[in-house]
Length: 386
Ligand code: PMP
Ligand code: GLN
Image 1 (cartoon, rainbow, N blue to C red):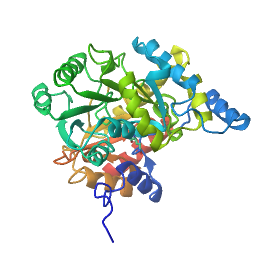
Image 2 (cartoon, rainbow, N blue to C red; image 1 turned 180 degrees about the horizontal axis):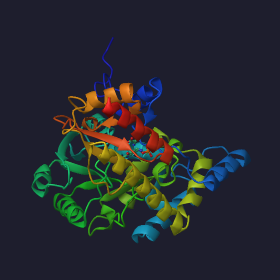
Image 3 (cartoon, rainbow, N blue to C red; image 1 turned 180 degrees about the vertical axis):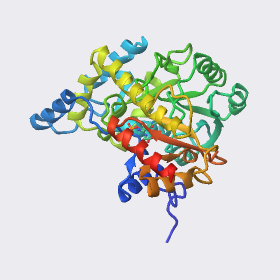
């Protein structure tokens, strides 16, 4: 038989699915895959349920329901001061994952180079490769995860078509600084490069820090695409509702990709997310505040157990350096032992690299109920003591 596509053939199942399957098999507390264990606001879920009963349950407009596109444009104005025309500058997608695929398909051609920053979210590399482009990987290094400006500048070439930035960044839990964003913006303008900004964690930022979209920087509005996710903003990861904001000239080709990937996203979910985006400031403050408290609850216990807990400014995740602990030879071995012996599933950070990965970091997901965090930490304590 003829070979199937080599980019996907033989590719491993994603680490998130793998760890969730192992967690189930070992009845482990699942601190691997990033999802909250309590569902998002009841009123949003009720609105979706009612809309499903009332209908219509037919194809909504290809770009998304007008009320959600209007809500996305309004949120861009409210949170970042961006003036977005809802009719020509917003697309609703089935999750940020679909949005990323649409953007890469629409903007990138064979022969192009696309700059990626490691540690990177796992769908980036295969999507860029499937588009026929060459990924150019740079990295931010722990514990500070600072961007190396020289490495960044060296990554840009005549062939660079796009840079893909995840800000706030999973699993580094980093919020890019104004200086870092300015450096990226300057190079994008200088080399005529698009920026695809995966900003799914935009509202999960702690300690009074602020998320600044790259799109807000000078010269970036016309060359940036910004991706958000209702999964993260409303703790409804299974809904898979995402949204893309961009200039008209970029949204046009991205919409053409979207129309042949999913075409639309379930209308009742879109309607409810539109209501969610208009929620009062206290909703957004409480979301970040609650997560921050969970981060602290887990970080204290992990530090007590001897883990070297890295700073965490955002997202659902705490990363720990395990090199000073004698619990396994590398991150993969430690994660395997932890799920099997301790009954706690976490994720090896080496999964977030395209090659030559550090092997001394593991990622804990802290968006869990307090008693679940406590149970996981108790299990780890017993395992480490044995
Ligand atoms: N980007 C990053 C950085 C993520 O962590 C995730 C995981 N949720 C996604 C994209 C995918 O988001 P969605 O579930 O909306 O497809
Ligand atoms: N974004 C989530 C994480 O980093 C996982 C999403 C998925 O499983 N595709 O854990």
